[in-house]
Image (cartoon, rainbow, N blue to C red; front, top):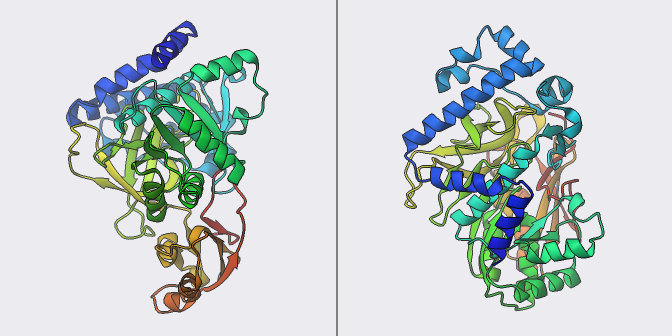
Length: 443
C-alpha cells in the first residue's frame, strides 16, 4: 500500500524518479558491452553540452587543442586534464552552464570531510535520479518497495523545520524515516529502537560511524531487532570492525554504497557481495598514482547526469581497484573494490614521507574494547590517537593500545610518536560525518 501511495504521489508532483528507476532496473541486466556503449554515449552528450554552454570547458578544450567530437574512445577522454576541488572553488561561476538560471538551481555542498566544504549547483533532476539510484541500490541489496528505510543521515535541512499536520501525514506514508546523525545519545538510541520495532520489514541506511555506535548500544542492551533485513552504509569508509559489530547487533547482511553529494550514484554492493559501478550514473576511471598504497588506483569520476555544473574527470579523493570479473548476481554492471581508503587518509611526515592511514587502522583493528577512534596529526612527528571506549574495554585492550608505538617503530614507516587520548566524543563535519583522519600539516 505504501509503495502505491508513493508512486501515485510522485506522479502527481511531476517526479520522474520512478521512471528513472524502471530505466535503471532494466539497464542492470544488459551485457557489459551494451552498458559500456550506453555509458560512452551519455559521456559524449555531456561533453558536447559542456563545450557549447560552459565557459570553463570551452576554454579547456581550446587549450587542449581538441573538439568533443574528436573524443571517440576512453583513451581519448583520459587525455583531458583532471578537475580538482581547488580548481572548482577558483572557477565556480565559469563552471555553470549558460542554459540554466542559477536562481532556480539547487545549491549543494560536500560534507566537509576533507576540510572546507565545496559549494556547487545541481538541477533538480539530479535529485530525482539520485533518489532512483538509491532505490536501485537498496533493491540490489534485497529491499522491496514499501518497506521502511531508516536513514541515519546528517543534512541539517531535514531537521530544521517544525512539521505541520500535513507534513506528519506525508511522513507516515513515506518509505523513508530520517534519523538525525547529528544528535544522538542513549535515550535517542532507545527511541530509534522503539520506532524500528514498530515498523514492518526495514532497512537501515546511513553513516557507518553512527550506525556502528547504535549497534554497540543494541548489543549492550541485549536488544533484538528481528525485522531489520539489511544495513546499507554510505558517505564514509566501512571498516571491518564496523561491519563486524553491525553483523552482531542486527544479525543481517551489511552492504556498502559509494557516492557523494557532488557525485551521487557511483557504485553499490549487491546481495552477492559485488560492488557494482552504476554505469548510467557515473563514468569512473582508475588512474595510476605513484603514492597509492599497494595496487590501489586514484578514482576519477564524471557524473553523467549533472548538466547545470558538469564535473569532467573530477578527482573525488578516493583510492580503489577495478575488479575484472563477473558477479554471480548476473548484472552487467562492472565491479570495483572499495576497501582501500581515501586519498586524504594519509599523513605527510618528516622528509616528505607518506604514512598511509590503512597501516594505522590495522594497529587498532580487532581491539574489541574500542568503540570508535580517530587519528589526528599535530605535526610531522606527533599523532594523537583519540579513542572512545566501549563497556567491554579492559586492561588487555589497554596493553595492546600502549604497544602501538613499539609496533610502528618496528615497521619500515616514517618516524611518528603516537599519543593516546580517551575521549567521550569526536567533533563531526558540517555534514554530520565522523572523520577517522585529521591532519594539521599542510601537504
